Image 1 (cartoon, rainbow, N blue to C red):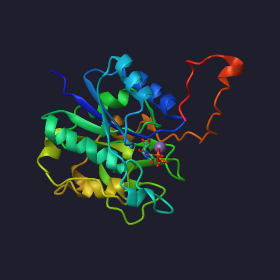
Image 2: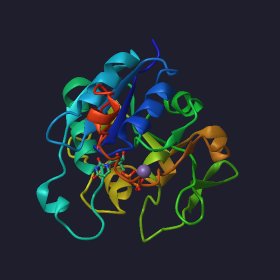
Image 3: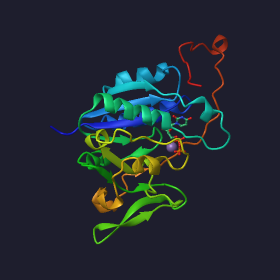
Image 4: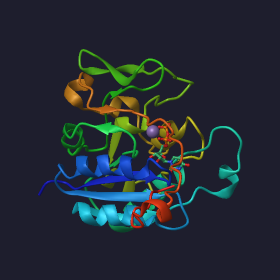
Length: 245
Ligand code: UDP
Ligand code: MN
């Protein structure tokens, strides 16, 4: 009876990957009726990821969506997670008929309450995101309970200056918009995707988290770690210990 939540998580192979996905998996283990779409920016599935997913007991799909080479070779900022999220949308179009979807990056921090907030989304819902940009917060602004604008450290002429972690969309609403997709445009992924849901205007946003007064998700970022050195198994044994590099 409760609407399903489709959680679309882009991920890619790096030393931090299993740590991030373990934390997110164990968050989602507290949420009912979740289908987790874990989509790797890779040509082959990382076996450690497959193994982690299967032992969580969460209902999941492990899909692949490598970033196109042209973007990968590009100097400067890259469209991180875009091929993955578009693959997730494609999966929804083929497999889902109801419920709500949410783009949950592997490195953010989620209060499990946010999943119950988003579950009742009819079109597009939004809420505050902590630790986001230089202002440390990104949120819709409400005056007397109705929409009056957005607060974000980087407005940049965007119609929807929001973070990826700050909105959810109903599956039916997506299915009624066959062309909706995320653009390969660093910094403008959220804005581009939300604009592609036209017709949809900011005044139609459903506000969650007590009218955007509670922070239930944080845009945390994990510091890049040095790749681990291979253990000298001849010296130390532990031949079964294989680190992700
Ligand atoms: N990501 C990816 N491929 C990459 C870089 C990132 O699939 O080459 C994923 C990453 O795992 C995360 C999302 O895309 O779920 C956003 O990336 P990141 O967290 O690095 O971006 P930031 O939070 O710094 O904007
Ligand atoms: Mn991130």
